[in-house]
Length: 398
Image 1 (tube, rainbow, N blue to C red):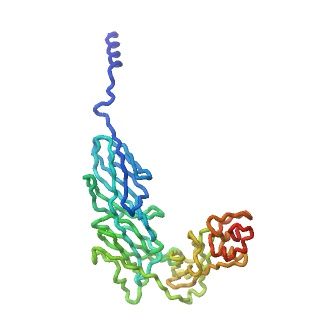
Image 2: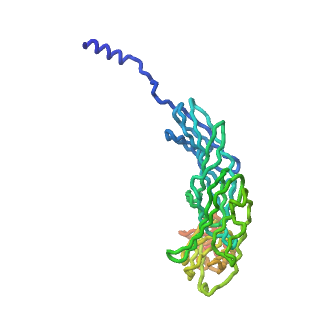
């Protein structure tokens, strides 16, 4: 018996091992390139198959590589975040996904071409046909559909949603009341909403909303959404507000620039605002603003809403020329802030520019060690160049 066991053990040791048993799972490598049509910039992209939960981010050149099970029908997703290549107003990004079933029996190259999106422009106005300075735009549904496409004989179903490029979420804030986005063709976009909030003192606010309703996207289009605030005597909204039932292909409607009548109501007699730059940030201090009024600053072409008696700051690329900082309170033009170009001494400079004035962004301090950031303001530097004692292209650094 012992000899028999020894023989059986020797046979077991010398028997060849099956390196690929019938039930072993095999894999294949799938690679390719994800591309977008002209005018569309890909911010990020990935490919995934949802059956075995494999996923691969694409490289900067759009190429990808993923390992997946062999000879198994898998649900694939090509996901992208895209934005307009050329943009001038508040642009938002589009997150889109394209799904199909794929099965590979060998290493394969599979390329995906994003379909051509359309340009959607949305503007927000009030009942008086004036732009609304500050709006939150949301979508009626975060999983909007896109019409299916066919590539390489395969049918893909599409989905899409808009996100803010600043906060990467679905609540999109616009300071210009105009939004531009890429939207893929769809027979039924469930709609966009615009929410305007008017702060009315501590803890209180009034909000109004405009809804577009569902609409089809078959080409470039413009939507003018009217928020029911600031009614005139007619108590009606402008006649050209977007109506999805009125036209299948809306046409662009220019949005007029608001032209408020300057006034000094008695309740605003003591209201004031001061402005000061700290580096590239502009600080605004508001005093004696009535609690029921909304404060809106216009800096150049940019609208900046804020709450009453608050101190707000925001980054700008350059000092706004004299006469272009305007303070609106409750729809009334209260004051225009002047930015002098000539200063007689550093004390005067520091009242408006905390760290002094630099000639260019490349100006470097060569004299007294400075701990504060100067503000780039060419005309201010040239008008006060006599204060640049150490000739380093910075006036009154400290």
